[in-house]
Length: 115
Length: 113
Image (cartoon, rainbow over the protein chains, first blue to last red):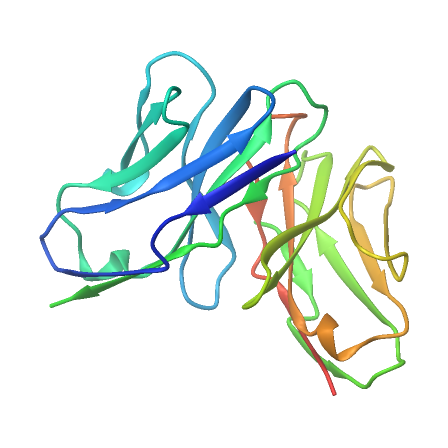
């Protein structure tokens, strides 16, 4: 079984400032890692994913995340946020060897970008 | 390319009724998953279908069921609705197995009175 903890439920940040969203996971098996974003009244959209290889992963809209196996973390960062980045962000994992696309999500982090 | 389409977008039911939600995946996608999203429990996996077969199932009671048709379209059904079933139900499709790269619809918001 897996679990995902997003350490911050809300993160207020000023426009053009950097932001980091923290994600820690627990799993007895190897996992794939993901960050999804949900804009108001919309479904989720994949920001980036870590399957293997380089631990620094770049995604869409200027976001990046770093996989740290020893700390079982996958923190998301953006060096300069825009008003349009106001949304809820979800970290998720899936079992690397399991058949199917079952994701376990964290509780989400609401990012509010202030002008 | 059309995205994942869910219908209806909003619906209101009363306790004890049943509801059927529909999902049309992106063309060519054979995997369809369903998630329940609530403020208290967050995003929880319901089930996944691939080529008309249920491949994974979450920890939900038997009142929650689903199916997938030969054209990959999927439906989920909730019988004997309870107040706690009020939620946003999200459908997601994927082109292949075990990529985790899901494409989500905008959801069906169910309110149970």
